[in-house]
Image 1 (tube, rainbow, N blue to C red):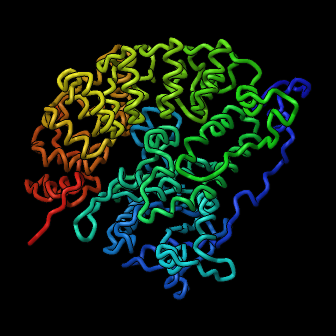
Image 2 (image 1 turned 135 degrees about the horizontal axis):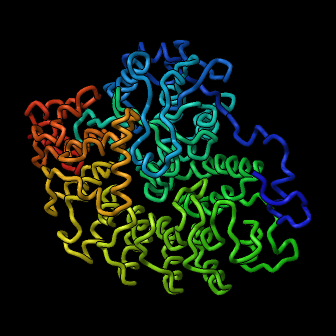
Amino acid sequence: MACCGVSGVNLTPLARYARSMKAHLDSDLLPMRFPMYTVPLETLLKMTKAEPHEELKAQGVLVEFERHRGQAAFVSHQWVSRDHPDPEFKQMRVLQDALKEMMGSLKRFPVNPVTEVAEGNVKPIPTSRILSEPLFFWYDYFSCPQKERVRLSMGQNPVSNSGRSLMDAINSIPAYVSKSAFFLALVPVLENPSKTNLITTLTWQARGWCRLERTCRELSQEHSWIIVKGARDLEVIGSMSASLRAGSGPVGDGIFSVSKDRFKLGPVLMIALKRKMLSLLKAQVLAGYRAFLNQQPLLFRGLDVNFFDPLGLGADQMGLDSSELTQFFHQNGFRSVRETDSGGWSPLHYAALNGNPSLVQDLLEGQADPNQGSKKVHPSLGHAAGTPPLSIACLFKNNEAARLLISAKAKVTNGMLIHPPFICACTANNTQAIELLCGAGCNPRHINIFGVSPMETAAYYGGLEAMEELLRSASASDLDPTAALYNAVFGGGGSEVVHRLVELRADVNAQTDGHWKRTKLMRAVYSLTVLQHRIHKVTTLNRIFYHAKGATPLMIALMTGQHDCAAALIACGAQVHLKNSRGWTAADFAEGRSVPEFLQQALQGRVEACQRVSLLAQGWVEMRF
């Protein structure tokens, strides 16, 4: 995509720099300081226990991956215990079973329904694509030095072997992810060996190391990834929607077992970001470049790094006015306050993304329109046409910028938008923005053009704090906790959200689809997706709507593979023998899927395991005396 006209006379400094870049990016932008040790598919399938890097290397089973050997898969996972990633081999067995399904009857990975809703261009991945070449797996415990990990966790100095240390491997993570054709998030619901903790998709998302790995994938050329919940529960995730960086949080805000680990990751993340930004400049995709340039305050929150400025020279060094606004225009390649770029965004949109209050104030004083909607879906960030700067500020938790926009008469409600400010604040679990919007006159019962309410949005994304903030401004009955419960199990809001909604008198045995038919537009979407299912263009989303009439929240949870939510529903009294309008029971939706044992038992009438799992998810630990 060209950034401007043929002549270079009127180009901005940014556009000139983009044009002048070399034909190929320097290979050392993604340095690999430690070999990419991998395990071949055949070896992985034969394993019965997870052994550390040193032992596997001594056995001669590790392979230094190079592209000519085949394809690599990067496996991201949460360690089940502090000292061993998978002491009972339960996590890895799920991956083994999934690989066997790929080699058997499983033909494709469907698109995750959250991604399907937000990004219509993400396609299912056929299993034949994964198995078309020899396959090698990068897995931290196999691929990185573990003796070094122990020394570093004890505060000792690392011992390097010809530079091949754990720190070298950590700094090579962006390169490992980039060289991997596939990125697998291995997140089955598991109890730890002592039965004091529960591992879920949400706990994986909260871990700092896992956030780093996922963010590196989002910054790589192939940015979609595959979530593995069970042997037959694998889904494709799009980078702009289901991971929602503003909602799941930056790397520096993640949870670390060793708190000092946080300080190692800033330079690693910077390596990945530099590569992404320079790649976008080389391709002259300036809208994408601006998106990542202005996300740096969020991306590096909690990490000690200096932000990246590819131009190198500030506006003041070029003899220009050194004000923040001039610097911003120089770095972003803008000329006027009311300009709109190829991504459909104005300078004020990017300033709201950046979050610098004085910059937002300068743009407003320069007559920037606080209600100017975006002109199209942004290619790097998503968000539908019409999204105003206030929505962006609320989504990325830039609340001082949001306060300034509201003071400048930015509209706080608009029922014709997909992403009005209130919906964005709840997406991000942004309690301060919710308080601001309520103070400016927002009604917590307000719905967007698809009929989705703030409470339903908060539940959908697991925003427990946002739900509590909404309850300060409206009664539980006004916020329709039952509709929110359906959205929580659809989007994977988690078992804690399920329990809170039940406390608010959500009906776990409701059988309705009315919450998905509130507006004319949503009714049209509903009818279209049901029709697609009938003509055998089956996706996860249209399967849900096809079966939605008379479906209980438990049925939706089983269709979407939200196993922790399903356990919570059963623990709260969800009945397993109810039928939807097509005569299906919960057990029918579990058939042919890889349902955990605790759910299998519950569908047969034994609910004790689900009750235990549900308590673990809430932080309750059973102590035996």
